Image (cartoon, rainbow, N blue to C red):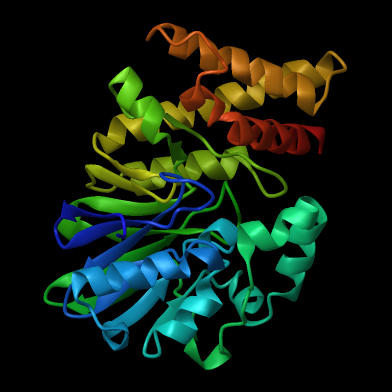
Length: 311
């Protein structure tokens, strides 16, 4: 049974079971044309197709696949999905298009990082036929029919090949990683949307990230649809929080490097910041499963902060 959640306004969240539940979302927008936002990695294609079947949507009806950026946990399955959804155009940031058409560099880079775990995590990465790729410019719109118009905003900071998708009908944005990450289990435990910026190497840029937070924050939005993971209301408060945390992370990284430390020391400082907040909600144990879920993101954030400051 697929994990499909109706979020209202014709939006359905699909859990792609990326290694485990509640890590990576795909969103389906049911309008005059059907649009999917994110594919996740290739192993998630089965979840996606089961969700379409559950919703009674033939594969031929899907007109658009939109990937917010080309990191493999967001777009690694774009080629497989394009093969399964024969009428879908694939929308990607102009900087990322060539890597969907020829993913060899993405594959090589990921194999260097993940080694023997590559196949388990990402499966087969299939090229997207170039004639099916669309590269929306900053501010360009996509009319899905029935009064549903999406607008693409280029959104550097997390990565230069990133855009977010504004959906006025739901007063929301599909944010990829540009506005951070939402942690479901922790959110349930602490009673609010627990979010954190995503600042990985090699393209994290705090100045560009602040500009993105400010630009998206100026839109009339209430909801953020995080790829990792799920819907958060109170968009302005979430954006304010994560914008401030970007600055705090960068400052912490600079202090550590000035004192001769490196990524590991930055990681420990970030953990102290996180645990100080969680301690206020009675979560003082770093071994708690919901807290341990943060580990990969804290490690990547520290590496990205160190990489940027070190430059």
